Structure formats: C-alpha cells, structure tokens
Image 1 (tube, helix red, strand yellow):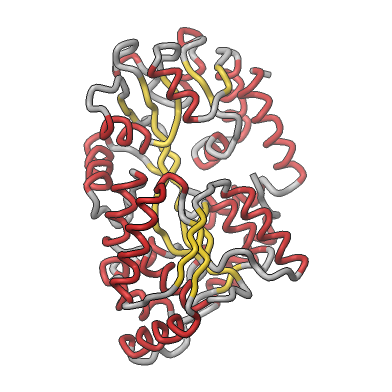
Image 2: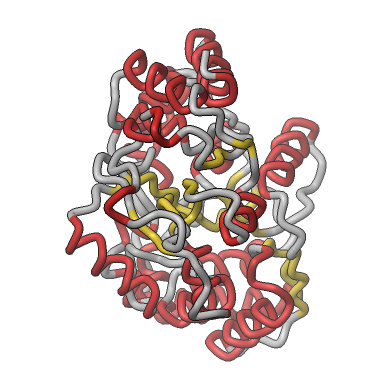
Length: 374
C-alpha cells in the first residue's frame, strides 16, 4: 500500500480546498464543445475493471458513444493489475514519459499517490459539465468527487468489505459479529485472510492503533489460511472454510450465476470498509477531452447499470441499480457503519500517518500480525 506523509496530505487538502471553479459558461454549450474536441481527438485509451469482461466493456463503450454521439476508437484495457498500473503511472510521471492511458481507475491509496506525484489532471468546470452529462450524479456531487480529490477523481463504483460464509457449515448467528471477534479461539482454522493489508489498515479509522494491532494479531493466532479473495471463496464453497472477509459483490455474482450456491453475506457491526473507485485523467493524456467525457459519464445511472450487470460492482452513493439498492437497504436495516479514508480530514490524516517512518513500521507489524499472530 502506498502512502504519504501527514504534511503532504494536509498540503493537498489545503490546495484542493483553495481551488474554486472558474466562472462557468453555459453548461450545455460547454459540454457540446467538449464533445466536439473529443471527436477531433478520435481516440481514447482507458482502463476498465477486468471483472466487466469483454462483453461488459463492449456494452459500456456502446452506451457511452450513444450518450455523446461520438464514433471514436476506444481502446479498453481489461487486464486488471490496478496497483501495478498506478505504480507505472507514477514512474512515467517522474520520468517525463507520456502516459500509457488517458484515463485510469483505482482505489484511494493509488489515486492519492498519483495525485501527489503530479500525474493526474484536474478537470476544470467539472460541476457544470457533470450537471449536463449525468444530472443524477450532480445531485450528489460531493460524493461523486469527494472534497479530498474534488475535480481529480470521479466515482464509478464502491467496493465494500463484507463477511462471506457458507450457510451449510455455519449459521449467521454463529459468525463473528465484529472484526475483533474473529480473534476468538473458537474460530481457529475456520477462515482465510488475504495476502494484503489494504482493508486491515482501515481498522485505524475505528480503533486506536495499539488496540487494532492486538486485534489483528489475534486473527493470526487462529491460524487462518492466506488466500486471495477468489481462492478463499472457492475453498469456502468446497466446504474447506466456513467464512472469510471479501468484497461483498462476490456474493451477488455467485448467487446470480447459481441461486443455490452456498454463500451468504453479513456485515460486521463495528465498521464496514468502503473504498471509492474513481476515474482519473492522466496529466499529459493524448486524448484529454475524450477522457474527461468518459470520466464524468461513468458516474451516471446509465453507466452504473452496466457496471452492476456485468461486474456486480455497486455505487452506493448513487444507489440506483438493483444491487446498490439492495445493499443500502440492508445497511439501513442492520445499521451498518461504512467508513472510508475520504470521510473527513481526520480519516485522511490517519491514512497519511501510514506514510511516516512510524506508520510504515506499523504497516509491517500489521502484515506480520495477521499472518503469524505476533
């Protein structure tokens, strides 16, 4: 996980807070000029989440072209590896190499790192443009482009951590109710944890760092298997594991494909990690206007419906698609408490602490704790 010093993040907040939108021209005329500029560019090189598959990407691109009236070449990269691509983008920026992509998509740590490196272009006058291309997203503009990345990142999906379980092996009432309860010795050998700490470190939003480190160590003492989400879910479906933490959309994906699949979903009662996935325009993009259009349109209900249909990825901020509506309904009923690094300056400061020498050592201790229990 990439992070920065407190000073860097706080300076970023000051800069973003001080930036104001330039006087907006008539919004519809501004949008039309952007479309014409994109038409002249004739191309767009864009990342699309690999879970969309080729059919999903084709549907997404076709819908974008219908909405904008553009008939340009769109090269969609579906190979995944978001972290590696953002690391490469940082290297490109520092070396002065032209960017591989016009438009990239990723989670908060990767986006913040690339902003800090100077590799993301702010979209000026984004608010009036958004009001025209996605008026429903404009109504929640503060969630679509959170204050920490206002004008830089635009929400297309929310990735949410849940507790997936095999109801044939364990009932919902017998599951751990909080993250801390996963350390109960009675759950020894029942679950897996991923080989990364991206989600684990978000416990700092809720808990004191020493208390959280001891909580994570308690998981490790339960000897969990170290598996990626996909591998862990496969083992759970086979009956080798009873539950695991993973993105909640896996449950919707498996149930859509097989309504009888033995997979249930619960959310922890203490906190639920939420990561905003945003599109960002690369500084020096070869086709910046096409990139701006796609980034803004991707926030729309039309785009969300396609993302949900093919990738099962929700946008709980917009809450228009059937899966997103179902998630928000469950959250209301169960009083789920979602948290993110973009919630407020205090949560962002906690994230920035991870970039200090002390924070990096803490991250290493967290990784060792969840793996080895010490």
